[in-house]
Length: 117
Picture 1 (cartoon, rainbow, N blue to C red):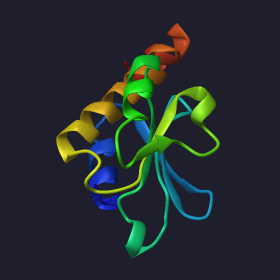
Picture 2: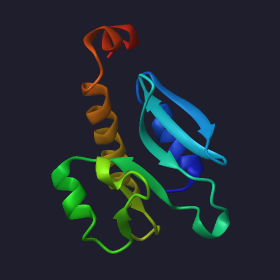
Picture 3: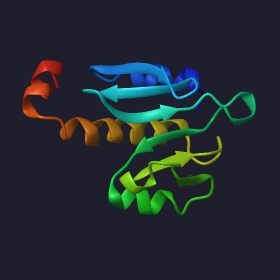
Picture 4: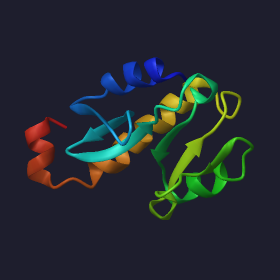
């Protein structure tokens, strides 16, 4: 998934916000909490991206070729997709939506109400 595709999909999630930080990374948040990141790594690594996942998904995904524990975020059960072949576009979107849901479900009730989720 290219950064443009990543940003387009994340933008479609209700009340998701976008910032560019950490040397140009595209960072997507819900309620101020990060659920997915696409770093600015240049053309040769344009398909790398990271997202939060469930404990079970983390265990399964880390065993697949082209997917590793996300640097700096692995202890919080984040994975990083490192190649375009590691996962198809549709599955990436499903996992990003799940990451969004995991993070949004942890938000306080008043914050959810404020965001309309």
